[in-house]
Image (cartoon, rainbow, N blue to C red; front, side):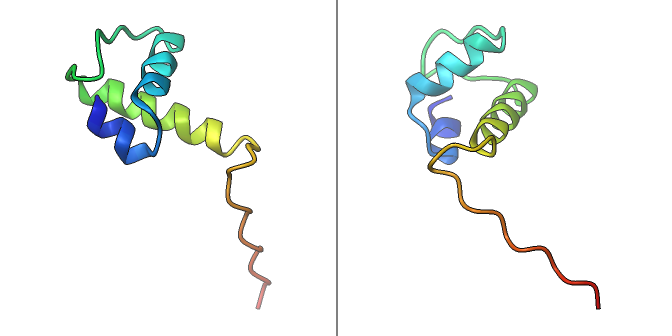
Length: 66
């Protein structure tokens, strides 16, 4: 769990809170989580990050048709 939080650039407490919000129970940051739960966390945090937070990177300009 801690490794995934680090990989995603978030604090373990944030990751635990997000999983709880998603209905997943994880006992502690040192807990092992199953791959489907890890994917769910990654998707949720990616969606949250792209929903307009101030830390999000600006979108790349669209390519012009050639």
